[in-house]
Image (cartoon, rainbow, N blue to C red; front, side):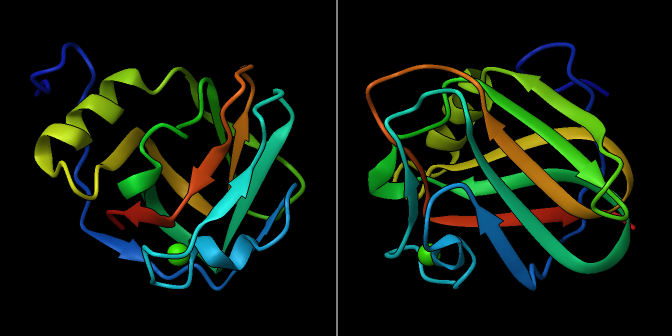
Length: 152
Ligand SMILES: [Ca+2]
């Protein structure tokens, strides 16, 4: 199966899994997981060294995407994003590496107000999901609300 954006496979994504804690390279990581799109974690300007780690509390099967709403922070998307997952917080497995232009546009078309950006990757068992911003821009990187989606 292919998405309308091209050859990217579409994986079954059943539900968001609760993120029990978050840590990041800038303060107030919890603002991205508090269920309120009006509060946001923000870091920047984008230097290429910003990071955010979501902890699901225990390993979850079929972790296959992250979704973040941008809302009014739509300009503050990560210019280049690396996503890695881990079962134990020590060994990290690559999940995504590149720009997020296609999923950002897709989210804006689906819901212009919230702009939910879904970045899919090959499903795997994971407890931790780490997002790293590796690009450079004068704008900040903002995460109003982050979810981790799993099919397992
Ligand atoms: Ca929030």
